[in-house]
Amino acid sequence: MLTIVESLEELRYSTEPIIYFSRYRADQVDNGGARRSAQLRQLLSGYDVAFVSSLTKQSAEGNRSGNALFDRAVKLIVRCRTRKFSDEFGRWLFFSDRLAKRWAKALQLRQKPRLILVDDPIFFPSLIRYCTDQDIPVIAHCHNIEALSRGQVMPRCQQELLAYEMGLLEQCRAAVTISSEEAFLLRNLGMTAEFLPYYPPSPIEQQLLAIRQRRITTDKRDFILLGSAGNAPTREGMARLLAAWRIMGGLPGERLYVVGYDTEMLRHASGMSGVEFCGAVTDQELAELLAMVRGGIVFQEDGAGALTRIGEYLLAGVPVVANSHAARSWHNLPGITEFIHLDELRPTLTAIIAKSPEVTQPTSPDHALLHRMINAVLSG
Image (cartoon, rainbow, N blue to C red; front, side, top):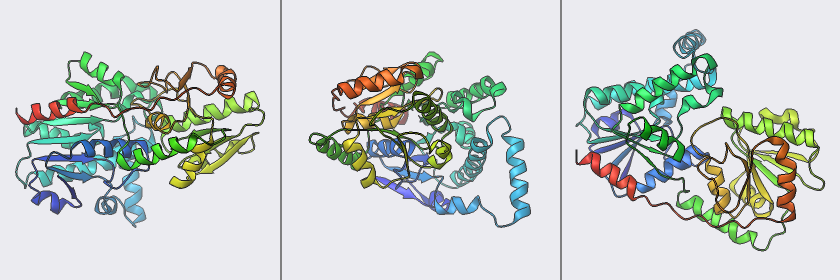
């Protein structure tokens, strides 16, 4: 059974033997990371788990202040302590670990948990250090190895920060990754790691299967470029793709729909031929687009983890056009057409228009490895 813990006070008095500390809310499914977290929670349904989010109302209020002098002081502290990261990412890390210190204090006042799961230890190093000191086993839920995303770190510090992140992961008993490449890397560094492919949680799965059914009878046209531009690797990839679309002059008779949170950052390209900016759309509006587009375009030149939207496109029956870096962990699946360089974009899309590839429906991955990992740690 999963129990949602909303406050530090509830955490102190919780009795569940397993605690899952996440950087996503329990009701959140508005981005790939949140859906991946929801997938893991669904797979934990057979265990007695307390779920604690860094995005509760209480934690958000704890990180805000109406005092301008205090806010300026916080900004200076953030820059000083996280200057090796980008401002945007460093601020996220600072406030996440600030909360992790409160979590660690709350854990001192409750029965020692048998196991802790943590979304990406780099966000909560104080919690990892506390668990190491108290010999509480930790399983890292690795959404990404964050230091591999160049847009989030100062270039001169990337190797140093990668070593720092690896050091935090080494303090964990095991790690479950969303990408096969990261499981491969961690195992070769002597860590226990298992690859659990992304598969959407049940409500999202049903929405996508309904779109797949609708696509059987719809006329296909146009392409979609979907992503949360607030994420640096995603934003940079979308910007590069739009620049390539401008250079090639679009495609005759075809539109490119740009969809997702914070895509207004990319509106400098709004005057381009055949590009339509939709911004953040409702689930129904997105379903309408996915039911009729020829395919979804995905482009990234850096970034780690695996792109959840590729798996969701495939489940919805939408062909995927992706460069090889973006297609990591999804290579060679029916329905994915890969290209290497952006100058291959036009012929690749033209081929999709001429003959739409068959998209095989993905199946839910075997989660037995995850349960064996958890049971092994619980049994000591």
